[in-house]
Amino acid sequence: MGTFTEAELTDAFTAFLAEVDDLHKAGQWERFADLFTDDVVYIEHAFGRFTTREQVRDWSVKTMTSFPGNHMTEFPPLWYLVDAERGRIVAEVDNPMRDPGDGSVHTTTNISIYTYAGDGKWSGEEDVYNPMEFAQMAMGWCERAQELGTLTDEARTWMEKMRKVLPR
Image 1 (cartoon, rainbow, N blue to C red):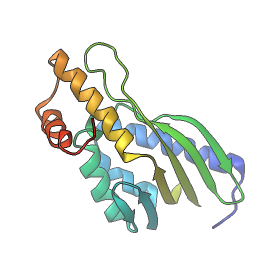
Image 2 (image 1 turned 180 degrees about the horizontal axis):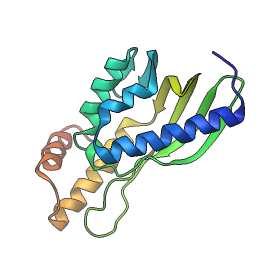
Image 3 (image 1 turned 90 degrees about the vertical axis):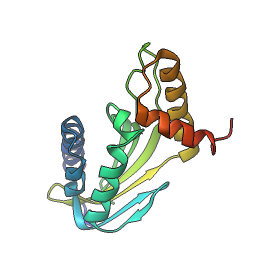
Image 4 (image 1 turned 45 degrees about the vertical axis):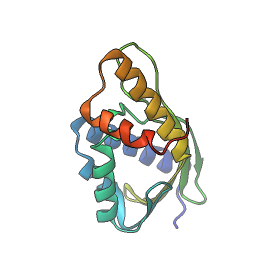
């Protein structure tokens, strides 16, 4: 793990966020994996540990092109800390869903720990969150969209499946 200056890390994180925003808007989640080194260690608490770019690519495409990922509008950090000595950024990331049709806000956050490798690449990310809390937020979005008549077929299928496993 190299030592980077706070400015280097901040610039790299700003570029990372801009690229994620661009690929999200373009619907090109396969590009997400290219932000990482070949030997990435990506820990996603609901889906597991990924140790290659291809595993990250497969996961990001699958999750972000299907509900609820494909209904998220952006991924802004609400705050972040720079640990230059360890080459890390720790951020609280917001995950807002699109408006179900009445202006209501449906979102939840996660804490992400990013490990920088240099040259614009990241060697690791860990997304820390409560999967149940996230699922309940998405269920709330589905229920509101259903009331408004804006629920997509894909979200309806997810909602019906999740109603069987989520506590009410």
